[in-house]
Length: 192
Image (cartoon, rainbow, N blue to C red):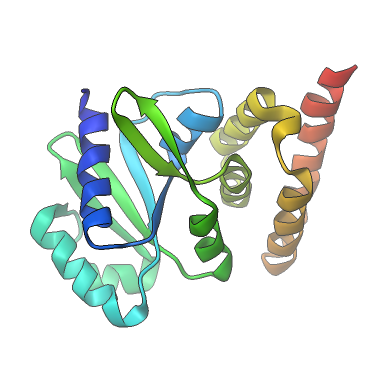
C-alpha cells in the first residue's frame, strides 16, 4: 500500500466511523474517471450540520494535524479545513454549503482504486461540474480526459442542467459554452 492509499484509508475510516456523509473529489476523482495525473493530496467533501461542525473540527484536530491556526474561523470563512492525514499526505476537508453538494454526496459511488482499497468518489458528471466551476486550466484539461474516457456514458443533460444553473448564479456563461464545445469536439466528434 502506498502513502496515498494509506491516507485514503485513514480519512475514510475516520469519516465512516462517525457516520459522516462524504465523497472524494479532485485528483483522486480524476484518477477514477479521467486521465490519471500525479496527485499528492486528498480532497474530501463532507456534509455536516452547522450545529455539529465545531465538534467535528475539534475531533478532526485530535486525530489529524490541522494546518491552520484558528480552524473554526478558517472554516467559517473558506468552508475548507486543511489537514495532514499522514506524514506525507495532506488533505482538504470541504464542507457542503449548497444543496447541489449534498445531492452530489448522495450520488457518489464506491469504486475500487487498488487491491483492497475502495473509495467513495463523486460521479464523473459531478466531477466535471466541480472542475468547470473552478475555471482553472488544469481542471479543463481534466474535463477533456473525462470526456475522452467516459464519453457517451456521461449524462450530458444532468451536466448541462447544473452548469446552466451555476453559470447563471455566478454570472459566468462561459463555463457552459466551453463544456458544450468540448462535448461536441470530443464526444460527438469521436462518433464520426
